[in-house]
Length: 253
Image 1: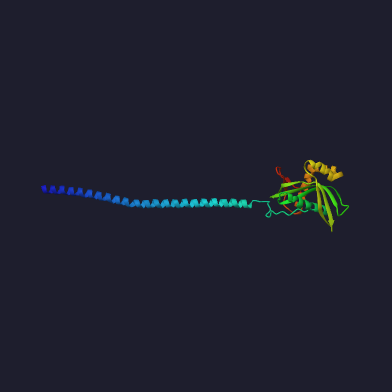
Image 2: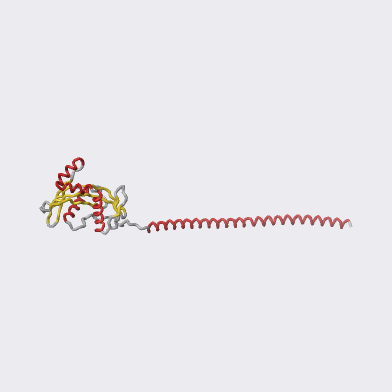
């Protein structure tokens, strides 16, 4: 009976020992299982991070492409903007538009001989108001007038006055085979000698000259008419003229 009791105690102790061992083994197995799953989770996290990085890179590339496309679009819009600026900005030289050989010769002289004394621009256009003439001697034709020269710079559809000046006086011309050539020009002096010089050159035509020369409004209309005639003759797209410090003025159509 005592032996049975001892055997039962021994079996109970063994059961306790075996249970503890099983618990430890289970815990170790769980720890190992948990440890094994950790790297897998880290791999998943790394994969997710790479995906996010790829998405960020793609988004950055898309944004860059969008910006680039936007700039290209803006450039296209700027390139498509209408412009009145001629592709070739070289303007033809001025020639008198009417069939008047005497005025043609005077205009050529003003452009090429007087105009060269001013800073060159894109075109030199004269202006003139004839006060009187004497054509009785073909070898000594005389023309009195209020003569002007202007240098113009082309700016899109507008001529901007660069330089110019007044040169009233007496033109001497010679006719040869229906061709007229200026042989001499008596120009009115500047400064304190202006009045005396003008009266000497114009003589009994001085009052008429003074009337023309002192009428700035009429003189300006004549200047614009010379410009308009030049534009029409050469079929140019110029529509305005602008003097320094003043607003542009539309030319007569």
